[in-house]
Length: 354
Image (cartoon, rainbow, N blue to C red; front, top):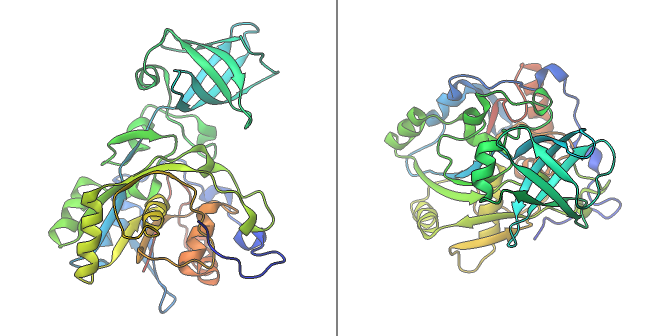
């Protein structure tokens, strides 16, 4: 599933997703309280920009609107250790556990480890034996002693901050803060960042105002950090991510549509789930891998309003935002955000696109 190209040479140039961001605008720490992050409200129908805060969200949504939130939980997937053979530093990112118990890892170290080598993690008394490389260049490894991955990661892992935040070096507070307050289903190696702005108080206030909510799940994978490589955006091969939508969420969507409410996607991950299942006929519960790639132009069948953070240049996330609000308006909004001092990326501010 994908968007469709606007022309053929190239279909959509990658340079269209460029913008210049001063390095000091990349947020290194989150705002506290969460809902005090700034919020740029963009009206697509008029092109108007309004500077607000996330706690103002109830003023922009109405009774009968439906918030759709991604309830994935970030796992402590970053691993630090050393190679037993050389003593050299080793870093890894847990991607998944295979049916045979081995782990699939993205790794970084000096030199070229060989199959059979051992890595000792820096805490928790766990070793990993590297067994083979995948076609994608990932390592497969056998943990020793063997325990479920979630048990070992909880004891040995670190919060997988993206590299643009303190070079990926997490502090103790990041384990709680790089997570939504409603995270329930473990499986992501990156946070659904738009959802990190919500507090229990804000959620209660939205509910009191008659704004409903439903949950979907999409486990964010390492592909979310990878820039588009092709100079023609339409030729990018989209990474797959596991997602799920329940009967309760489907029922909430159908009630919202029946009552003429708006479906408000919280984050690009929620958009991917919603627009994946929107292509089912009829709309129904579903789980599986999605490779849905959204770029301009794209027919949005379910999402009416989008709450999202500010994204990296040349990314599939920025392509999705451009598809939703239009390329020219997106660039104008980003220019406004930069000139007005908004904070960017995972720990940054947000944009509400109406």
